[in-house]
Length: 117
Image 1 (cartoon, rainbow, N blue to C red):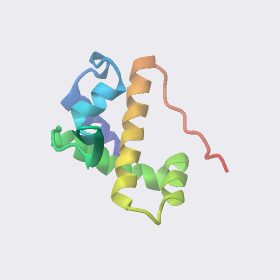
Image 2: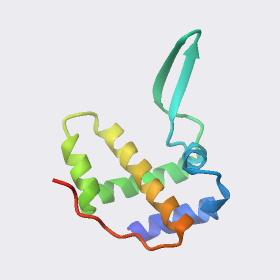
Image 3: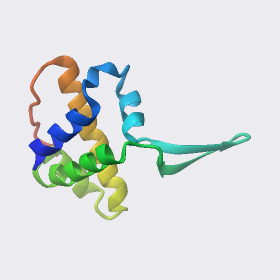
């Protein structure tokens, strides 16, 4: 399942290195919070509605797999399990996107790390 998600993301985005940074890529896909400001107050409202819906759904589906199979992300999910699971999965999707971007930017293979206990 995960290789298909990676292929889908890469075919939709193309070369990830064309983005200036991970923030630009996250904004392009729609994994960033929506901000609303009025005067001196700023509110966050969850993820932005402007997005590449297909890409975001690929990453969210991949995040569910990562939460089950990746030791580090599994621990992250387990530690926050009592809270809103949708927010946790969005955060895991964002972490997965960060990993993908880092691997392609550096040109080094990804290595699984054991969780810190």
